[in-house]
Image (cartoon, rainbow, N blue to C red; front, side, top):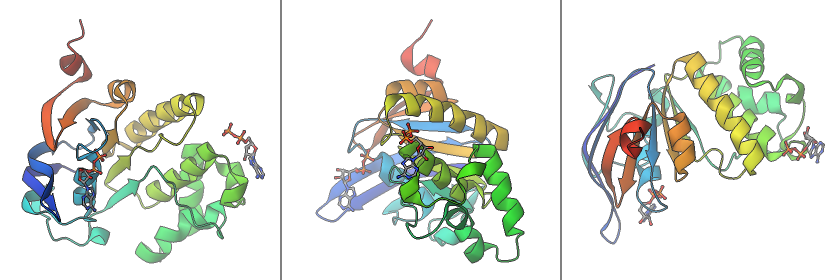
Amino acid sequence: TRTISLRDVTKVYPRDVVAVDRLSLDVEPGEFVVLLGPSGCGKSTVLRMIAGLEDITSGELLLDGNYANHLPPGQRQLAMVFQHYALYPNMTGRQNISFPLRIEAPHADERTRVNEAARLLGIEDLLDRYPRQLSGGEQQRVAMGRAIVRRPSAFLLDEPLSNLDAKLRNRLRAEIATLTRHLGVTTVYVTHDQSEAMSLGDRVAVMRDGVIQQVGTARDVYRLP
Ligand code: ADP
Ligand code: ADP
């Protein structure tokens, strides 16, 4: 688990699109921070810069206090889960989950690590199925399994529930809260859903047009009694 700091970070896409504008944010070890805001306000761009999937135009990213703007994604010890689960269709659940281990930790005890992840997510019964044999929620759980099997020091979740129906969304939301707290892992979670942000975040950063308008506990941000 680790500290993630953004210092005056700006992202300019081609054609002078300023997606993120001198944004600063500190996420403490083990903290769950939600980036909340409407579509197009720059949330995914922030997450992708933390993950190293997008260059930072100016400003600094610090991971555990170390300058990380140019650190290769594979060395950041972060796991990212997207809205589109993007499982490998020709691999079983088990193969999907173990795939990152083959690349990043070839000497790990693969079977034990996959079983441990599956137990945490309650998907032991799904490991031998292919993605087409899984429901949306089940696929998203397998995608989470693929993220946690690496024992990352931070999670980056980009609208991981938005493709799911309301009932499933509520269930998985609770599971994500339990899981990240159980693992004690620093988490940055992107959503446009206010109730999701309120129920999940230790702190909520409200974004608009590439800047954070306010940041605080759900209570602070919504001025609850
Ligand atoms: P959000 O996640 O809040 O929906 P994004 O970070 O995806 O916002 O996008 C922020 C802004 O950057 C939007 O105006 C979007 O159109 C623009 N943008 C995102 N990705 C690209 C890209 N690859 N090239 C150009 N513009 C982009
Ligand atoms: P949910 O309501 O959780 O989205 P579904 O109603 O889609 O789930 O599926 C219910 C059960 O049927 C799940 O256990 C799922 O794995 C199984 N299932 C769904 N589609 C298929 C399929 N094409 N082949 C085999 N099992 C399936």
